[in-house]
Image (cartoon, rainbow, N blue to C red; front, top):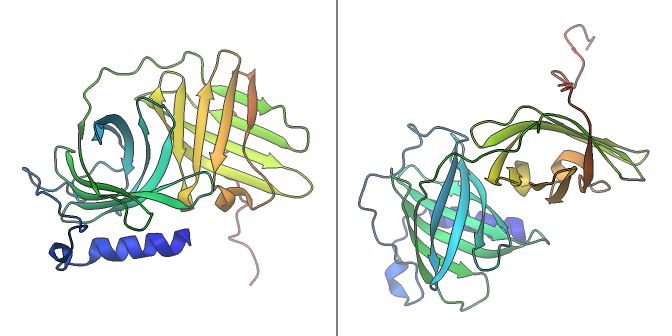
Length: 268
Protein backbone atom coordinates (compact mmCIF):
# COMPACT_ATOMS: atom_id res chain seq x y z
CA UNK A 1 0.00 0.00 0.00
CA UNK A 2 2.80 2.44 0.88
CA UNK A 3 4.45 1.85 -2.51
CA UNK A 4 1.17 2.46 -4.34
CA UNK A 5 0.54 5.66 -2.41
CA UNK A 6 4.01 6.98 -3.10
CA UNK A 7 3.76 6.10 -6.80
CA UNK A 8 0.51 8.02 -6.98
CA UNK A 9 2.18 10.94 -5.23
CA UNK A 10 5.05 11.00 -7.73
CA UNK A 11 2.59 10.92 -10.68
CA UNK A 12 0.75 13.85 -9.16
CA UNK A 13 4.02 15.74 -8.80
CA UNK A 14 4.96 15.23 -12.46
CA UNK A 15 1.50 16.01 -13.83
CA UNK A 16 0.47 19.51 -14.84
CA UNK A 17 -2.05 19.82 -12.07
CA UNK A 18 -4.66 21.44 -14.28
CA UNK A 19 -7.60 20.21 -12.22
CA UNK A 20 -6.43 21.62 -8.92
CA UNK A 21 -8.96 24.46 -8.96
CA UNK A 22 -11.97 22.16 -9.30
CA UNK A 23 -12.19 21.29 -5.62
CA UNK A 24 -12.04 23.30 -2.43
CA UNK A 25 -9.82 20.51 -1.09
CA UNK A 26 -7.30 20.86 -3.92
CA UNK A 27 -3.73 21.87 -3.22
CA UNK A 28 -3.47 25.52 -4.27
CA UNK A 29 0.19 26.36 -3.82
CA UNK A 30 1.31 29.96 -3.76
CA UNK A 31 4.22 30.67 -6.13
CA UNK A 32 7.69 31.22 -4.67
CA UNK A 33 9.12 34.72 -4.74
CA UNK A 34 12.47 33.53 -6.11
CA UNK A 35 13.66 31.12 -8.76
CA UNK A 36 13.05 27.40 -8.19
CA UNK A 37 15.74 25.39 -6.45
CA UNK A 38 17.79 24.06 -9.35
CA UNK A 39 18.87 20.43 -9.49
CA UNK A 40 21.78 21.37 -11.74
CA UNK A 41 23.15 23.84 -9.19
CA UNK A 42 22.32 21.77 -6.14
CA UNK A 43 25.11 20.62 -3.86
CA UNK A 44 24.01 17.01 -3.57
CA UNK A 45 23.90 15.40 -0.15
CA UNK A 46 24.16 18.68 1.77
CA UNK A 47 22.04 18.85 4.91
CA UNK A 48 19.58 21.73 5.22
CA UNK A 49 17.45 22.66 8.24
CA UNK A 50 14.07 24.34 7.60
CA UNK A 51 11.71 25.80 10.19
CA UNK A 52 8.08 26.88 10.08
CA UNK A 53 4.62 26.00 11.40
CA UNK A 54 1.70 23.66 10.76
CA UNK A 55 -1.58 24.85 12.29
CA UNK A 56 0.43 27.33 14.40
CA UNK A 57 2.59 24.51 15.80
CA UNK A 58 6.32 25.16 15.23
CA UNK A 59 8.16 22.43 13.31
CA UNK A 60 11.73 21.81 12.25
CA UNK A 61 12.68 19.81 9.16
CA UNK A 62 15.98 18.15 8.28
CA UNK A 63 16.38 17.60 4.52
CA UNK A 64 18.94 16.10 2.13
CA UNK A 65 18.47 16.28 -1.66
CA UNK A 66 20.46 14.22 -4.16
CA UNK A 67 21.33 15.15 -7.76
CA UNK A 68 18.56 12.94 -9.16
CA UNK A 69 15.95 14.88 -7.19
CA UNK A 70 15.51 12.28 -4.45
CA UNK A 71 14.64 13.89 -1.13
CA UNK A 72 15.12 12.25 2.28
CA UNK A 73 14.84 13.60 5.77
CA UNK A 74 12.74 13.95 8.88
CA UNK A 75 10.78 16.58 10.74
CA UNK A 76 9.38 17.06 14.22
CA UNK A 77 7.00 19.25 16.14
CA UNK A 78 9.09 21.22 18.63
CA UNK A 79 6.43 20.59 21.27
CA UNK A 80 6.72 16.80 20.98
CA UNK A 81 10.28 16.16 19.69
CA UNK A 82 9.28 12.92 17.92
CA UNK A 83 11.11 12.52 14.60
CA UNK A 84 8.94 11.66 11.61
CA UNK A 85 10.97 10.40 8.61
CA UNK A 86 9.99 11.18 5.02
CA UNK A 87 11.07 10.62 1.44
CA UNK A 88 10.09 12.46 -1.72
CA UNK A 89 11.00 14.03 -5.01
CA UNK A 90 12.08 17.46 -6.27
CA UNK A 91 11.10 18.36 -9.84
CA UNK A 92 13.16 20.64 -12.10
CA UNK A 93 10.64 23.48 -11.71
CA UNK A 94 10.88 23.50 -7.91
CA UNK A 95 7.79 21.41 -7.16
CA UNK A 96 8.34 19.10 -4.22
CA UNK A 97 6.29 16.22 -2.80
CA UNK A 98 7.19 14.50 0.46
CA UNK A 99 5.69 11.31 1.91
CA UNK A 100 5.88 10.98 5.70
CA UNK A 101 5.73 7.47 7.11
CA UNK A 102 5.44 5.93 10.56
CA UNK A 103 6.99 2.94 12.32
CA UNK A 104 4.87 0.58 10.20
CA UNK A 105 6.47 2.18 7.08
CA UNK A 106 3.01 3.17 5.83
CA UNK A 107 2.49 6.71 4.51
CA UNK A 108 0.62 8.82 7.06
CA UNK A 109 1.15 12.42 5.86
CA UNK A 110 2.16 14.42 2.80
CA UNK A 111 3.80 17.73 2.03
CA UNK A 112 3.24 19.18 -1.43
CA UNK A 113 4.42 22.55 -2.70
CA UNK A 114 7.35 24.45 -4.16
CA UNK A 115 10.84 25.25 -2.93
CA UNK A 116 12.96 28.11 -4.23
CA UNK A 117 16.68 28.83 -4.56
CA UNK A 118 16.74 30.22 -1.02
CA UNK A 119 15.33 26.94 0.34
CA UNK A 120 11.97 28.54 1.16
CA UNK A 121 9.15 26.00 0.88
CA UNK A 122 5.51 27.07 0.36
CA UNK A 123 2.77 24.48 0.11
CA UNK A 124 0.30 22.24 1.90
CA UNK A 125 0.45 19.56 4.57
CA UNK A 126 -2.23 16.90 4.82
CA UNK A 127 -2.83 13.45 6.26
CA UNK A 128 -3.69 10.39 4.19
CA UNK A 129 -7.14 10.07 5.77
CA UNK A 130 -9.99 10.60 3.31
CA UNK A 131 -11.32 14.16 3.51
CA UNK A 132 -8.43 15.37 5.68
CA UNK A 133 -7.91 19.13 5.74
CA UNK A 134 -5.03 20.58 3.77
CA UNK A 135 -3.17 23.08 5.90
CA UNK A 136 -0.89 25.86 4.68
CA UNK A 137 2.78 25.44 5.49
CA UNK A 138 5.70 27.79 4.88
CA UNK A 139 9.25 26.76 5.77
CA UNK A 140 12.41 28.84 5.65
CA UNK A 141 16.07 27.96 5.87
CA UNK A 142 17.32 28.00 9.44
CA UNK A 143 20.48 29.98 9.95
CA UNK A 144 22.44 28.67 12.87
CA UNK A 145 25.96 28.36 14.14
CA UNK A 146 28.01 25.28 13.35
CA UNK A 147 27.12 22.47 15.75
CA UNK A 148 29.62 21.64 18.47
CA UNK A 149 30.05 17.97 17.65
CA UNK A 150 30.89 15.20 20.11
CA UNK A 151 34.61 14.75 20.73
CA UNK A 152 36.39 11.46 20.05
CA UNK A 153 33.43 10.05 18.17
CA UNK A 154 35.58 8.20 15.61
CA UNK A 155 36.36 4.58 16.35
CA UNK A 156 34.89 1.08 16.48
CA UNK A 157 31.77 0.12 18.42
CA UNK A 158 30.25 -3.26 19.28
CA UNK A 159 26.66 -3.91 20.30
CA UNK A 160 25.47 -5.94 23.28
CA UNK A 161 23.11 -8.07 21.18
CA UNK A 162 23.03 -11.73 22.26
CA UNK A 163 21.81 -13.38 19.08
CA UNK A 164 24.16 -11.85 16.51
CA UNK A 165 27.22 -9.65 16.19
CA UNK A 166 26.90 -5.96 15.35
CA UNK A 167 29.78 -3.61 14.58
CA UNK A 168 29.70 0.14 13.96
CA UNK A 169 32.70 2.06 12.61
CA UNK A 170 32.69 5.87 12.53
CA UNK A 171 35.08 8.22 10.81
CA UNK A 172 35.86 11.66 12.24
CA UNK A 173 32.81 13.92 12.49
CA UNK A 174 32.90 17.22 10.60
CA UNK A 175 30.59 19.73 8.95
CA UNK A 176 27.58 18.41 10.83
CA UNK A 177 27.92 14.84 9.60
CA UNK A 178 29.96 11.65 9.91
CA UNK A 179 30.62 8.68 7.65
CA UNK A 180 29.98 5.23 9.07
CA UNK A 181 29.92 1.53 8.30
CA UNK A 182 27.68 -1.03 10.00
CA UNK A 183 27.83 -4.80 9.77
CA UNK A 184 25.84 -7.56 11.42
CA UNK A 185 25.73 -11.31 11.18
CA UNK A 186 24.25 -14.49 12.63
CA UNK A 187 23.46 -17.99 11.41
CA UNK A 188 20.14 -16.67 10.09
CA UNK A 189 21.06 -13.41 8.38
CA UNK A 190 23.67 -10.77 7.66
CA UNK A 191 23.68 -7.12 6.68
CA UNK A 192 25.89 -4.16 5.90
CA UNK A 193 25.82 -0.44 5.25
CA UNK A 194 29.07 0.10 3.39
CA UNK A 195 29.45 3.88 3.53
CA UNK A 196 26.55 5.66 5.19
CA UNK A 197 26.43 9.38 5.90
CA UNK A 198 24.70 10.44 9.12
CA UNK A 199 23.63 14.03 9.65
CA UNK A 200 23.56 15.63 13.09
CA UNK A 201 20.19 16.88 14.28
CA UNK A 202 21.74 18.13 17.50
CA UNK A 203 24.94 17.60 19.44
CA UNK A 204 23.82 14.15 20.60
CA UNK A 205 21.61 12.93 17.77
CA UNK A 206 22.17 12.09 14.10
CA UNK A 207 20.14 10.51 11.30
CA UNK A 208 20.89 8.37 8.25
CA UNK A 209 18.51 8.34 5.27
CA UNK A 210 19.10 5.24 3.17
CA UNK A 211 17.65 3.36 0.24
CA UNK A 212 13.98 2.33 0.03
CA UNK A 213 12.88 4.49 2.99
CA UNK A 214 15.54 3.13 5.37
CA UNK A 215 15.95 5.48 8.33
CA UNK A 216 18.52 5.05 11.12
CA UNK A 217 18.66 7.23 14.23
CA UNK A 218 21.84 7.56 16.33
CA UNK A 219 21.50 8.77 19.94
CA UNK A 220 25.00 9.55 21.18
CA UNK A 221 25.58 9.18 24.90
CA UNK A 222 28.77 9.44 26.91
CA UNK A 223 29.37 5.68 27.03
CA UNK A 224 27.40 4.31 24.09
CA UNK A 225 25.49 4.99 20.88
CA UNK A 226 21.88 3.81 20.80
CA UNK A 227 20.75 2.89 17.28
CA UNK A 228 17.18 2.45 16.14
CA UNK A 229 16.06 1.86 12.57
CA UNK A 230 12.95 1.81 10.42
CA UNK A 231 12.39 -0.15 7.19
CA UNK A 232 16.03 -1.10 6.49
CA UNK A 233 15.43 -4.58 5.06
CA UNK A 234 17.21 -3.39 1.89
CA UNK A 235 20.48 -3.63 3.85
CA UNK A 236 19.94 -6.78 5.92
CA UNK A 237 16.87 -8.73 4.84
CA UNK A 238 13.83 -9.38 7.00
CA UNK A 239 15.34 -11.37 9.87
CA UNK A 240 17.84 -8.84 11.26
CA UNK A 241 17.92 -5.29 12.57
CA UNK A 242 20.65 -2.76 13.30
CA UNK A 243 18.90 -1.77 16.55
CA UNK A 244 21.03 -1.97 19.66
CA UNK A 245 23.30 -0.29 22.19
CA UNK A 246 26.80 0.05 20.74
CA UNK A 247 29.71 0.55 23.14
CA UNK A 248 33.08 1.87 21.98
CA UNK A 249 35.77 -0.82 21.96
CA UNK A 250 38.57 1.05 20.19
CA UNK A 251 39.61 4.49 18.93
CA UNK A 252 41.01 2.76 15.87
CA UNK A 253 39.07 3.12 12.63
CA UNK A 254 39.24 -0.12 10.61
CA UNK A 255 37.55 1.15 7.46
CA UNK A 256 36.69 -1.58 4.95
CA UNK A 257 37.37 -0.21 1.48
CA UNK A 258 36.12 -3.22 -0.44
CA UNK A 259 33.39 -5.43 0.97
CA UNK A 260 33.41 -7.70 -2.07
CA UNK A 261 36.30 -9.60 -3.70
CA UNK A 262 37.55 -8.68 -7.15
CA UNK A 263 35.89 -10.69 -9.90
CA UNK A 264 38.00 -9.61 -12.89
CA UNK A 265 39.38 -13.11 -13.33
CA UNK A 266 36.10 -14.91 -12.85
CA UNK A 267 35.40 -17.45 -15.58
CA UNK A 268 31.97 -16.94 -17.15
